[in-house]
Structure formats: structure tokens, C-alpha cells
Image (tube, helix red, strand yellow):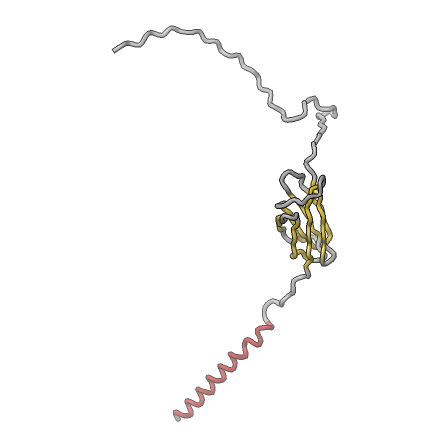
Length: 173
């Protein structure tokens, strides 16, 4: 009787092990399906000075991609000593807002459609230009204020006049 019991319990134990071994085979039918990432483009940006054509090292190149009206985040890359910035994570078919910021130069910004696997973009940076503004008052007449920083007009108050008073000499000890 005891041998029958051990054979039966061994059979049940082997059956449980076999069922547990088959469980991972059905795991592929649960959970999320794998979705391959979209193909990405290789984008190379060359940043140069407009007036002499030399590269600008260490300029910040900001990529802000969007696809179908959905913002995909942003990424900033610094240019190398040859003035190049390279990125390989922007999906093909998206629109990239490119912004270039460099010390001593005006900020550059433009949108580009990434429709091919490789895209080369050339950016010529300009020095800052003088800015002139014309202002009008509420009646449509030109403003009478001088251009530049406006200093507040503060009323001058008369300075009080004081008469010198005589003080008694300090006692000596």
C-alpha cells in the first residue's frame, strides 16, 4: 500500500512539474505586444559664422521634434570644434523645430520636415543687430519720450535748513 502511495504522489508531483514547465510557453499571449520603434533619421547640423564662414564650436543646438501634432520632447546637443552637431533619434516623417544658441550671436530658429533617412542642415549665424522701436501714445500720436531706458521722474523735495546750535562743553573728570 505504501508503494502505491509513493507511486501516486510521484505521479502527481511529476504532473505538477510538467504543467509548471509549460506555463511560460503561454506567456507570450499575455500583456502588451511589442511594437518596433519608428525608423529614425540621421540629422547633421553645421553651424558657421556668416561673415567669415568659420565654424562655431560649443554652440547649443536644440531639437524639438513633433509628429502629427504631438510633441516628442526636446534634446540639446553642443557642436564639436568643427561646428557640427549630430543626432540619430528623430523619427522620419516628423517636423523638427531647430534652435541654435551661441555666445555673441543672434538666436537662430526654423522648422524642418524630416522626410528622408539623412538630413544635412547648414546654419549661418549673424551678430546681433540694432533694434529700433516706434511707440505711439493712446491717441495715436508718436510718443514724446526719448528712446532708451526710461528713468522715473522723482519730485525733488526742498532740503530743510538747519541752524547750528551751540552745545555745552563736556565735563572733564
